[in-house]
Image (cartoon, rainbow, N blue to C red):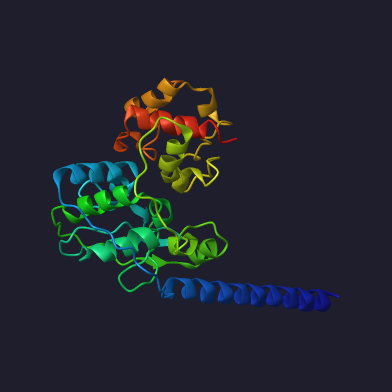
Length: 290
């Protein structure tokens, strides 16, 4: 009796191990194919201005679209999204200045990265939210490129990125946004300009940046690490639905909710230099999201 139980237990466990190995081999093959895929894209021809007004406008775009939040105020001291102890792998935002350890990008290289999420080799950039940035108007895009091109070079080398089995599995099942290039319409056309208006349409144009943390439906997400709180619902069904426009603006000015709760460091609202009108537009859009 015990021999039969032991035999069948061994068969079941062996079968499970084989199935897991088969599953991971599929995961590895698919993710590796995505990582090494070479895209053939037609790069948009953009004229990059070098005047002071465009530089200032570009700095604002970089601040409200998360570039500064990820790559640092100097665009070289990038945030570590997954450290050496992470089960996902090691991922740190790159030094995107022209200093040692940074990048040497032409105007077209910037278009390739920001519109398509691709590096100079036409392979996907890792954990680069180009799917949130590619929809910028041509005017905002050229201003942004004007700004990042003119940053002082910083000598800072970013450690080599890596992806572990768990990171591959999460990427495979769509729970980890490793390769934004897979989410982009590489044949899309973009408008020349989007004028600032205090309405929901303009708020939607700006709020795409929020989706990186708060999910595509703005309903929030689970905590991404033991020390990080759950990411809240910022649609009309969350707490924001009970706030006034001015209270939403004050949240970004003070770092406190209308209820008096101090936001965690994982929501660095003061890095986002939105104007009051921009915030009111975002508020109007989020209030339409059910």
